[in-house]
Amino acid sequence: MDQTRKVQADHDIKMFNRKTLEISGVKEVDSFDSEEFLLQTEMGYMVIRGSNLHMKNLDLQEGKVSIKGKIQELSYLDEQHGEKAKGIFSKLFK
Image (cartoon, rainbow, N blue to C red; front, side):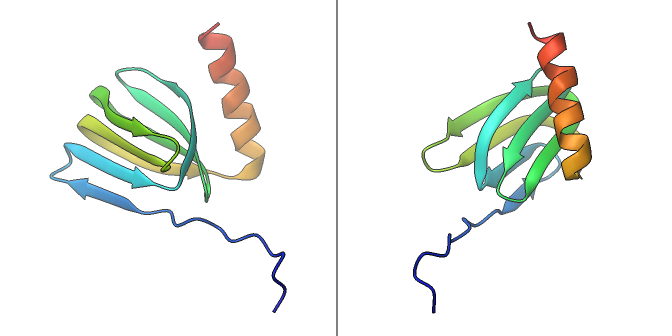
């Protein structure tokens, strides 16, 4: 086998009673507020929407994020929408 091939880190999501999310395989937290988080994960950009959202834990060395609040939506953005979303968020949070 090719030893130089990059090994992709695991990306897992655990949700507890729609109130807490534990996510692994997170590369970066691009933006967040009380209603929306934009994360860059091993599987692409992820958007979490809800109300009263806040970051409980963040460890980017381990690639883990915990989010608390009322989770209403969890979705992935494809490659084309990822850059568009990142651009929109960067304009909002300047």
